Length: 163
Image (cartoon, rainbow, N blue to C red):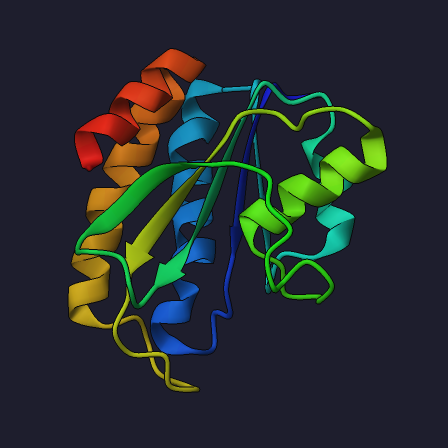
């Protein structure tokens, strides 16, 4: 099993909501020629309780999604387990998913961070907006640099620089 999990979500049919899946696609293209077996990239329409099993035996987890609230081009921060309002839904937050992992497996989840890519337009049938595309480019470069330095300390330092 890969030590690093990149878990993205979003709806490719809803404009900038496609930022998470598009990040995944681009990271896969970058990783494929280099053959990076320690990184697994998964994408879905939303986070669900079943994704807790995907966190098993991971050293690091990077969650990535589109966000209306992130400062452009993206935000990056450590996330900790929390039973927030999404805990009982099928559209979970990363914090709730980490809490579900702890509950299901009886131990702390792997260290995790959220990469929130700034989006603006989420209309059905629209492509990713020009501004969001620029934000995505910056996020891809940032995520690639994270994956090239896979350590908790390096990712925490990167999060501190983004504040």
